[in-house]
Every structure is written in structure tokens, then in C-alpha cells.
Length: 221
Image (cartoon, rainbow, N blue to C red):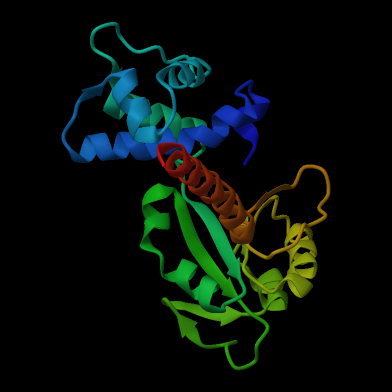
């Protein structure tokens, strides 16, 4: 999944491309045929200079006085992200989070298709969730289907073992929701979703705003 970066697109730019694609989708829903860099940047939450620099890595510069063609730029970013095909996804761990992800309909419209659900709980194996039969990792390894991306939503204590098994099956892209770091071989890409860390960052900014408000009140008093 890191192919764009290897072709010369900076990793930070790759991280912002999904936001641009989402913003372009919003523009398309409004029936907007073209969009300025300022408007697109505003929708994506970045500076217009940053957006233009990012899109220049794709060879897209827009047209002065017109902006970017929404459909054309959407297709270009989708190609760069590898979203012109459906990527088969397996979700491992069917607790509340895993079930919520399995039920999410947005994957299909964004180039991802959940093809397998895995859990080691005997009470779940063989049951149907969202139209898919839950299987074990052994069953997935022996009978397929082939998956390109593994999503780990297990407790931390079992996440590394799950990652090892997925890598052994040939999975080279992993999205990890478990609250731990994973050790994987070179050539395997891991993206970590740490909600606790994100909340701590939000707490930091909330504290700064609170302190600023207190200071303003003291100054005014």
C-alpha cells in the first residue's frame, strides 16, 4: 500500500490525499464541475499552498482562473492511491469494533471489499455476520479467500500473533486497532489507529484553550 511513496510522492502527501478525495466527493455531490485550490483546501482542512504543492507531485496544477476539474482530479487521486480496483480485506477480531467495521458500508465505495471475518471464539466460528461466515485463521489460511489487507481489532495480547499469521499468508498491509506496536518484516506496511493517543492530543489542545480563556478572563478582570 506504500506504492505512491516509492514513486516519488512524499509519505506526508500520501497521507493527505484521502482528505482531498473526500473533499472532491463533497464537491461532486453538490454538482460542482470545477473547484479552486482555495475552496478545495478549505474543504480538506489544509492551506492552499500545501494543497497545490501536494497535487504538483501528481502532475496536477489546475487551470488559472478555473481551478481543478473535480471528476478528473478525483480519478487521478484514486489511481494514485490504488483505488481503481477493489482491495480484499479481512477483519480479525469480532468484538464491538470489529462488528462495527464489518457493518460499515462505506468501504465498498472507497475501493475496499471485506471478504473474510475471523475470530477464534468457538461461539462465533461458523456463524454469519453481515453475510459472511466467521472462520478461524487456520481456516482462512487453508481455504482462502485471498486477502490483501488485514484489519486487526483483537485485544493487544493476541495482536502480534495475528499479525504474524497474516504476514505468513502473504498479507503485506495491516491496519492495527489494537493498543500495541507490532513487529513486522521489511516490506510489510502497518498503520496504527490509536484512539487513546488521539484523545490525549485533543486533551492537550483543550487544556491550552482553557488556559488561554482563564488568562483572558484574568486580564479582563
